[in-house]
Length: 272
Image 1 (tube, rainbow, N blue to C red):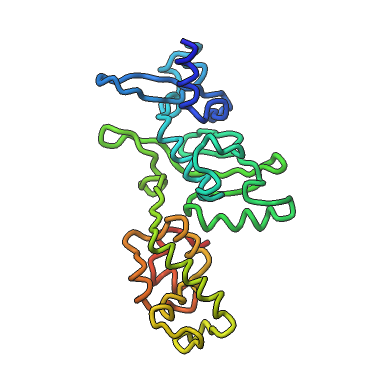
Image 2: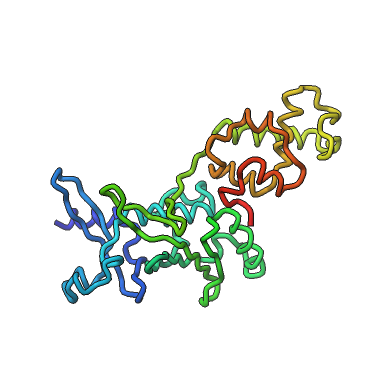
């Protein structure tokens, strides 16, 4: 029995860090379907202990599908810190608390996840906004050295399953679509720029000296994409269908706002 409890606890990485809108702890709960499949939930502690009848608890918060909620939390943390720093919720030591509210999920995070010191905090808060959804809000919490990320989302049933839905009705969790070829091309563009940077002019790359290869002359233009567009590509948040070949053969405007509009990045909220 003890081993069984340990296994279940390990499968619930938000245990001890998740509360409802009134600050009441939510605890892991498990159920098996007719096929024997195990389903995980986070349930209000007073409901779990039968201190309150389930019918009296807010139906939107009394029992939450664990996998969906965990996917939302992990995806937002990875957007802030990068998937290379946080691969799983078990590694997310900077996550202090998850507050589940009606229509929103609040994440309380250590500020050093994105800032080296207190003086860098205002700039650090402004920078990750380009990585989040337009409906998300990142702000300094009342507790010193803590951030509060407010994600507008709620769990709704759809087609016999539950989904985390954003204010626009779409999925609040957008999986990464990292394109190895696109990322490799962007990194190669910067390598070309570093090799011949002193001779390159962003206004007239076609005549750049030192780049004799026609493919490299086209590829190096990727290094002049807006910084938020480049970050979106590295994190797999580029518009669906965008490929390296399309970028190479697509005329890239000099103005960053024109780049976002022309390449379809405005629709994925990479710009403030």
